[in-house]
Image (cartoon, rainbow, N blue to C red):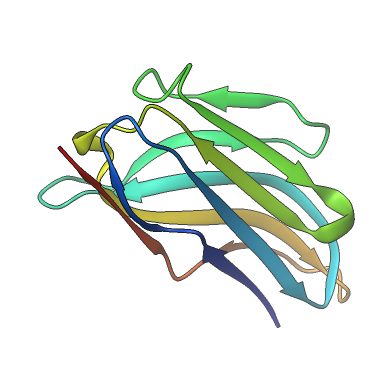
Length: 120
């Protein structure tokens, strides 16, 4: 059994910053790509950032230049530094990862989400 747990969400004023964490735990053999998604009220879930096992990153245009994704493989943890936050960044933020367990089973795992609210 493996799981992802997000933390770091909260309420921040426009222009402010937050740092989210996504920690993986359980019988982990390896973690491949990891990513961040968000689900805003009235909108579909949106992919916006990903990082591969070798550190290559990819961002959507909506966050490029403001958000930075990173990971600490030794800690099985991914981070999201969010700067210059805008009210339209308000959403529930989810992390996801492709994890191979000690039983050599690969599966996509999702966290429970953390709420980010940006006030104007």
